[in-house]
Image 1 (cartoon, rainbow, N blue to C red):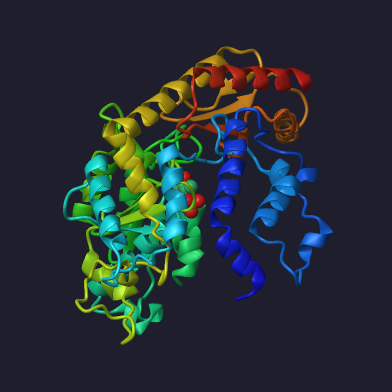
Image 2: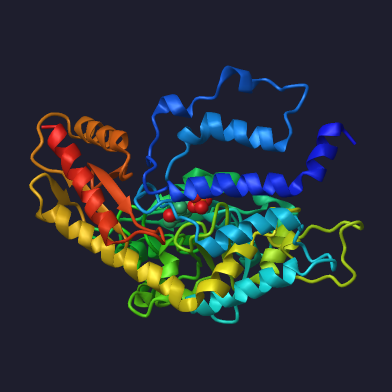
Length: 471
Ligand SMILES: *Cc1c(COP(=O)(O)O)cnc(C)c1O
């Protein structure tokens, strides 16, 4: 054994202790850390582009990293990072994630670890939390992008089955023209269409309801009526990223009765609202969808990267993702082995942080995070709407505030970007830009478990101060 490896093997307690110290240092300073460190601090040192022949040993390497790069880490896990849709990490999920790497299980059903059984149990608990019936199976993937990929892949197989072809076997060329209909497909679903050989052009954008991102089901029905016979996938939004609105799932289900299509529901963050009796109505009907996406690294506050794909069509999923090889077969072949269900072969024990969080905080803990985030998003929305310098572009439907600068002169997008750069410099709150109804807009998406009322006040002070700077 190389002497550095031997030294570290003998030094495990000191190394883990060092990592604990660094973690505590980070966590205790999270509230004061910038949500957007200066670009200068995000640069890699020229020396660190090189591979060194001799190593430093783990403790020195950890300290080196921390000394040179800790300043370049964002407080994105903290309570005032409202950019994109960025979840944090609860203590139980963090501790579990450390253990995932410690025990380093390859969680396929290889009959030498309990990891796979815990994954399956986590899926069952999640189904109960989110009100999904027993007919659904689910598996862990790295994010909603992959969950959308898997859902649409199973949909593609179903389209083939309707025509008597097996796409998994014969390839996508055996499928004639198809269409994918959505008013608001997330960009990751469009990417999935590319990866799946269906092509980005297969997406036909359906009109939205007036002044909303919700799909216009009348327009959808008209389109379905004139394209009867063309195999169809409908991508429904259960929480759009700009305004967190939900497509009318009961109406989509009624249309599916008349015009058979595959219904995929992207509930990357919005799906978690199903855990709350106050908000669950938004997802009414999703239990009849063909496939569903839910992210765990957003509103479920587990560390990156973790999401779940659900489907009612396990047999089709197995056709797409089966992965047989003499050296991989377990003594009894279980169809629910993720090896045959998702793009991955080997993968980490991804379920444990979620399992641990559910064990530690239960249904009510998750529900409280969701309801608190929504209440606080509404507070932030009210206060922005009441201010001189901001206006809301949409009602705060759930946990996302979509707003714009008011009473400004000059180019609206450039002024918005200048405003956001002041906000980033202050580092108190992160909001990210978007385009809504043809206007340059700003989003604040609240999904962090730590966010509290005083964070909204701090955020608002910073927003108002930066608004004053652009006048
Ligand atoms: C975040 C998000 C995605 C993509 O998720 P990743 O976890 O980043 O891959 C897809 N759809 C919606 C609605 C999202 O909010």
